[in-house]
Amino acid sequence: MACALQVEHLAKSYGDLVLFEDISFAIDEGRRVALIARNGAGKSTLLDIVAGRLTADAGSVVPRRDLRVAYLEQSPAYPAGTTVAEACFRSDTPAVQAIAAYERAAADPSGEGLQEAMARMDALEAWDYEKRAERILSRLEIRDLGQRIETLSGGQLKRVALANVLIDEADLLILDEPTNHLDSDMTAWLEEYLTQSSAALLMVTHDRYFLDSVCDEILELDGQGIRRYDGNYACYLEKKQEREEAEAAQRASDRNLYRRELEWMRRQPQARATKAKSRIDAFRDLEARLRTTRTRADLRLDMGASRIGTKIFECRGLCKRFGDTVILKDFEYTFTRYEKLAIVGDNGCGKSTFLKLLLGLERPDSGTIEIGETVRFGYYSQQGMTFDENKKVIDTVTEIAEEIRLDDGRRMSASQFLQHFLFTPEEQHGYVARLSGGERRRLYLCTVLLRNPNFLVLDEPTNDLDIVTLGVLEEYLAAFRGCVIVVSHDRYFVDKVADHLLVFRGDGEIRDFAGTYSEYVDWKRACDAARRAETAAAKPAAAAPKAQADTPATPRKRTYKEERELEALDREIPALEAEKAALEAALSSGTLSVEELTAQSQRIMELIALIDEKTMRWLELSER
Image 1 (cartoon, rainbow, N blue to C red):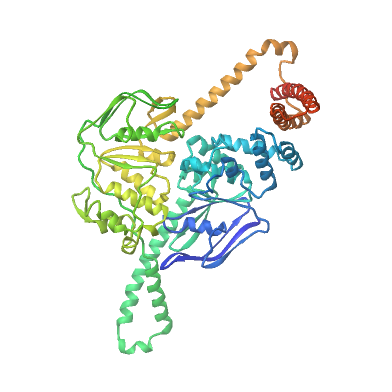
Image 2: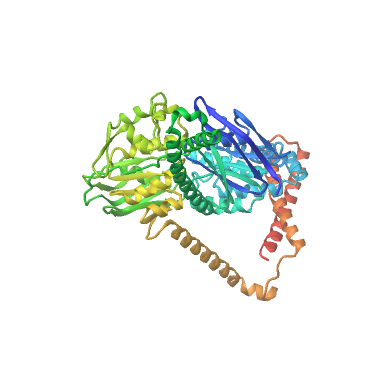
């Protein structure tokens, strides 16, 4: 398998903070590689270097000749005034540039440049390309191509950037958290798209189901070095455990050997010059190895929760809408003690709004929410906490609490507490401005939990947290002696945490599903498949009398020639409709001479006849 990109002896540091040094790896053509590391280890920095957005301190990135790279950043940004269409079709590829020009011309009421744009589309054979781009935009629910970028939410902006990367059809896709802000249907579609794509892939994601399904190679950035594992995420976990067990056994053996050799080194110091030099060198190597293989502490979340009573909250006749969008309609629900609930649904259906209603940050249009007197909320919002960049990490925590109470009654200082969150003493006295996005999320989680809440409300907590932190958070929530409501599209996380689901289906419809998120996804897919089969069965039944009179009982399949004809019609009909729209605009402009009016009126009549004829033929072929 040919190599698409080679990374050799790469190193990067910021001051005294060394992210990685002397790391080397290769990405082969067609391989789908995931990069795994703790927050702050340098994942996004490494992607920036591989994509050519950042310069390394040492080493090189050597791409294959003519390799086309598309990069989805963790937090994409576009110049103000950019439209969604311009952002989606931003590319050096001639076909994508032709589509962008065609979309601009088709959206212009004057029709100026439309003929030229269509001619260029024909010359580059870009109509199939445009049809594929439309499918991508449709699946990512990007509809208003004329909307300005600055008016989009963070989630909408991320989907626009993802569409741009996929439309570009590059040889290597570099994706930083591609599933953030995608609902379950979008994530399933993206999973299928990437597994069927021939492009190589380098990806960072916290979505473990997605990672397991898509990737066939894992790179683990750990201890400033990098390890490679063949296989998906499940294989990685198995092989990593085997490696760690072997390393633990080797470390125990090294410690025993070190004790013996240390005793030997201490004996007869006056004769040390006569000791075997090779044995002394071996002792020094052993000592250095034990220092560099010191294990890091795991994140521990054992904070206590304040006592909670039997009454949690009750919703009675709750209604909420924004304009024509109905969020809640006569919603009734009684939340019970120690209940752990996940809220799922498509983007924009009102999940976050429901949390804000519960917390009193939004007011309902009608109905009531009665909260128990002992309920003490801890709210982890999707937007996150805004930190003072000029403050130290330790000061951010001590402003909330000097001491933290644990489940067993012990107390720990703010500094000890931060160490349990993997903030070293050096990092605690560093400034917030130096933290990575994931480290800020971890600090935000810390500030929520140290208040000892008994009711956790978590809105998309998995975004930007590393896989290690997510695993420990899952264990903490499973043992948490309080109530939990979580909004998340992360199936793996929800399966671990929630006892049941509230499914927001849109238009105020909410279903209580007694099962895991994975079971709900399987049930939903089965229902959708049954609905499609029912619809498909109903169509031939309705058309049966005509089919019996005009065609054989078994409809024949399209021939190869008819397939090509159908593809041509898919290109020709939109082009004719665009030409017709341009002529209608010109006729209504009042600037044409009599001769031009006559000629263009005649052409419109011809176009209408052509469109009708080709549409009928398209319907005939598409039904076969």
